[in-house]
Image 1 (tube, rainbow, N blue to C red):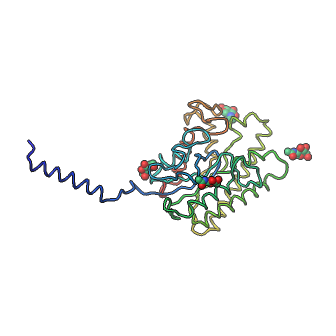
Image 2 (cartoon, rainbow, N blue to C red):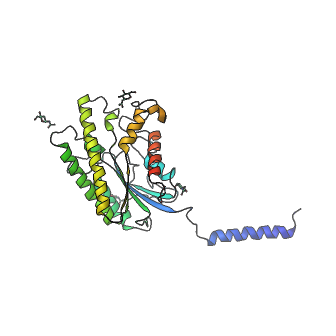
Image 3 (cartoon, helix red, strand yellow):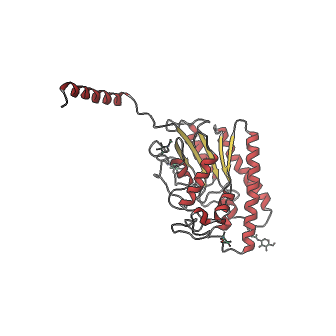
Length: 299
Ligand SMILES: *[C@@H]1O[C@H](CO)[C@@H](O)[C@H](O)[C@H]1NC(C)=O
Ligand SMILES: *[C@@H]1O[C@H](CO)[C@@H](O)[C@H](O)[C@H]1NC(C)=O
Ligand SMILES: *[C@@H]1O[C@H](CO)[C@@H](O)[C@H](O)[C@H]1NC(C)=O
Ligand SMILES: *[C@@H]1O[C@H](CO)[C@@H](O)[C@H](O)[C@H]1NC(C)=O
């Protein structure tokens, strides 16, 4: 039988824990960090910069997780934010489908990288109460170039010189992130889009040109990242080689759980549609990215 005395102890325990709950302000469950991502349909989650912002319990802000992505369902941003994260990442994803590096070089479908950077500078860069990020706890990532190359590779004139121009404009934008306090940068190169179902039907000579243009751009990007790090004291960079990662999976799709290298839209396919990887493919990308950045505040 429970005595009156023990009942009153239980009652007072209940009361004191209730009081403790009221007095103690709710603490975040773990360390909060930030991720500002820029890019195109391979990155977008459909985020609108001046609507509902990322918060604890709603790490992508708007639209709700997993957002609206190029392939439908989670993409690498979503998976890295909530599946492979080692801190509570508030993810501001400025990526927009169809985005290009510079609207004066390649006509964009919608917005271009400078617009995305401006949205960051006008909002989160000002460190409002909703996003008190620091140089140490904020990751900046850029995955762009797919549309720029896909929409111009067939044109006359030196593609190499054009890639130099694209990358000059690309890094002029990235410099603005450094000026705003960004110090941790992840760069992602252009994947082998000549293997996407949308493109594989092109003439073989066209595929060869696109492949060569992408490879040229990627090797120039690697050199630019190196120079960017040298020119900006205190900046850390990581590079995820999407080009190689896609090729490894597409060369042995079964090994990675996919039926083949060109089917799309069904469970088991690498491609979600004719131009975008599926959610299972993005899960692999996200894991590789988290491994590349292992030991950082995010992963
Ligand atoms: C959000 O920003 C866009 C421009 O990026 C602007 O057109 C729109 O009016 C803004 N919306 C609000 C609610 O401020
Ligand atoms: C990872 O993110 C989820 C969703 O925001 C969060 O609930 C979880 O606590 C985070 N994990 C760690 C280890 O911080
Ligand atoms: C490229 O140059 C060739 C030869 O001058 C011309 O026939 C072709 O129309 C040009 N193509 C484009 C896309 O400008
Ligand atoms: C798909 O794989 C086959 C061999 O299994 C190869 O011949 C073909 O070139 C590949 N296609 C693409 C688009 O990668």
